[in-house]
Image 1: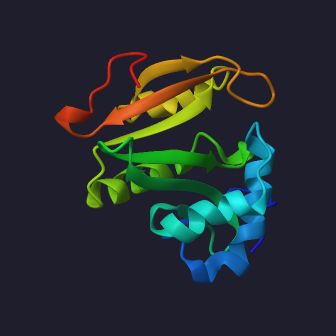
Image 2: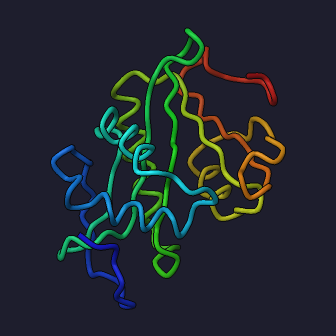
Image 3: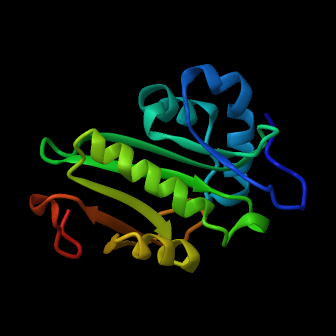
Length: 176
C-alpha cells in the first residue's frame, strides 16, 4: 500500500510484524517514507538485506485502509563473537503524525521481539541534530555510548545509543 497522504490523523492504527509476503504491498511505501526522513539514500538491496533476514524484527503501523504510518527495521546477530546485539537500523513516522506515540510503540515492539530472541543489548545511531529521536531513545532506556564524527554521507555526526538488556552488556562511553 502507499505511504499515507491524508492530513487527518487515523482513528486507530494496527501494528503488524513484517513478513516476506508483505514485500509487494509495502516495500515501495517503506522506501518512500524512509527516504523522506533518513539522512542517507538506501538501495532496495539494503531494505531486502534487513527485511528478508530479520522481517520478524520489523514492524509497521497501518491504518484501516492499510496506509503506512510508520515503520521500524531491525536486525539481531552476535557482535564480534560476543553478545547478541540487536540493531535498530531505520525508524520513520511521517512528520505530521509525530508526537502521537507511533514511534514509541514501534520501537517497543522491536525491543520486545529482540528480547524474545535473547538479545543482550540493542544499539542504534542517530544524527546529533535529531533531538526528538534522542529524547525518544533516552525515554526508552537507551544510553548514549559514543559520538561518531561525520558518520553520515551528509557530513553530520551521530551518537550511538545502547540499551543494555543483560548485566554483561553494559558498555563504558566510547568502548566498542
